[in-house]
Length: 240
Ligand SMILES: N[C@@H](CCC(=O)N[C@@H](CS)C(=O)NCC(=O)O)C(=O)O
Image (cartoon, rainbow, N blue to C red; front, side, top):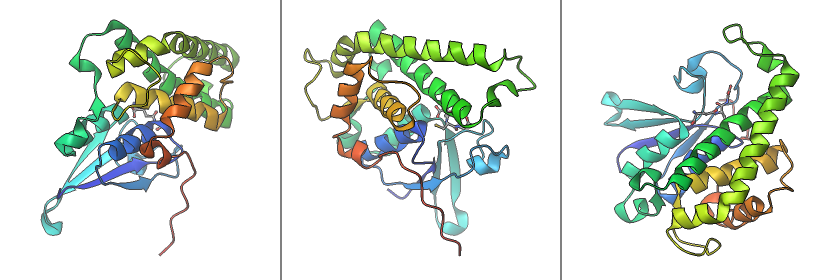
């Protein structure tokens, strides 16, 4: 492959981990370019993402004097693009939802994506109390009311995923037994793993009510791609 692949993000971010874990699953070599300041409001801090979010995928190709870069924003978007760069045998390890119509799997995917976004808000709220009420463009209720609803919706989402985990994994794996380890995986399972493991890492909610999700994450964490992307702080860049 003569395309240089960079993932701009951070090793403690669950959305970034979806992208990096999938790059490992797909055997696509990449460089992680760490972002240290998530509170900045200059898009250049986020590799040009106007939404001021990570991860961003930067693909650079061509000889150095003529090289051209393409940017892609968003973990799921990045995952799909990485699949186009993978060898066919590696690409087939990952399955996507659109290939079939399974109502349970689509609803679960929506809730996993919602849970991931809520987790971002809960982490921000925990670190910067008052941050959620400071928007001058969107009328947001007082912190406590907003946070209580956020937390309630988060717990409801996790409870739903706990209750539907077995049929969900069977549907995604197209197999009858949910617990059997398998070679491939799906975007939905990668996202669910990154979410549950991030809740453990950040302590945003108790995982005690969700033993099936915990077990799912334990089994998933044995995949080499999961081991290689464990949550951690990125070391500061060496100054030149
Ligand atoms: N829609 C984006 C969401 C990404 C996202 O929320 N990333 C978090 C890090 S896990 C972020 O950029 N947080 C900084 C902020 O929200 O200010 C995606 O799918 O990748």
